[in-house]
Image 1 (cartoon, rainbow, N blue to C red):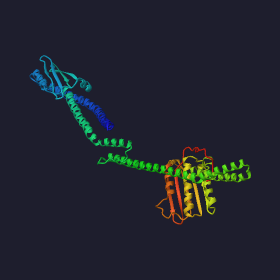
Image 2 (tube, helix red, strand yellow):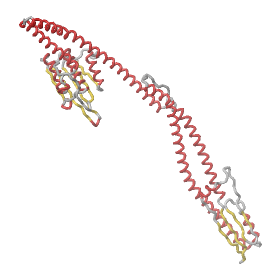
Image 3 (tube, rainbow, N blue to C red):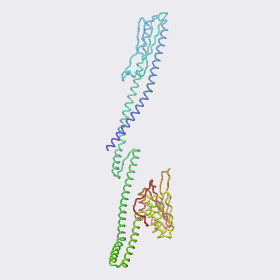
Image 4 (tube, one colour):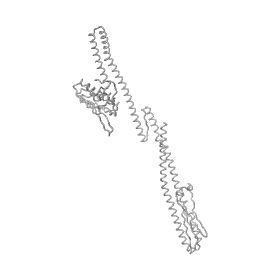
Length: 466
């Protein structure tokens, strides 16, 4: 749970940082645009005010030519500019007069010096001489003052900045609250993943979620279900493996007791009798007992070979897969010579001697046994080939054992032999299928992964005929 909270805080923090970056970039772009527009707007406004003021003064000077008191009119002209937002006008002459713009106020205060420098609009000054009837009455000095216009731009900028700050703060607050609430199910998912990591595959996540998180929840539940099925299958296979091991050990113990023990006892008895006869000089009588010992040893050898054939496919490690399959077929050919046997092993599969090769031999052995004992076929065909398609990422071995017998009477009820084949195929990562047609035959088809490297099966056992 602690790790999940850290991840959730990290996600919130990343979203907040992302929003802040977006806001800062937006602010920078808007600031550049506003700066260009503001500077141009102030210059345009100052230039327009300057031209209007100069035109007004020049027009007034022209009217002074017929004025009875030009100085008084000049003072009135200067006074008319009092309160102008952008112009400072003064009269430099015998009776100086001065008119200055009123300084406006703002709730955001005076524009800071850096902002004034950023706008970069300097005052513009011009002197207009006053001459009436060839007499000079001084000079009117007109000067622009960009303070009020700069203040207006500053107000707009400050308001925009405050609005953006409020919007950004509310956005960050909403992200922290609502995104955190939306992603709260991640806590449950993290806890569920920890449970799965501890091997508890029955846990599930429920409840109504957002569509994206709902897909994540459904995927998790499917994963947990499959892991539970896989775990159950592994337990079943392990139990089956232990059962088979115990059954095999029990069969070997019975064979040793029933087949070998009596002959060992007979050999011991014959050897003792032969030894006693030889000591008594009755060599001819001892020969019969020696012959009995030899016959018993031969029988024991045959029994040992039969047991070794059950433990390991004969010829697989020594000569490869083809020889091992031929040995299996030869075993049945001697017993059922009336049946036609066909064996086709691809060259790429002849040298398989690893776990896959052993699995193939066991599958063929069980399939042959089922066909010849129960199906009464006239023909049995064994095919082993490699199916390789690198573009589709496929490299498999396809094994089929097909007979033309009477087929399976109850295809829904598999015997222990076919169940064992299915489990063996699953154990090596393959899949098995059956094709059954009543009175037309039965087919066992196994698809196994082709081993990337194949090595010999280590064993000190000698080859023997099954």
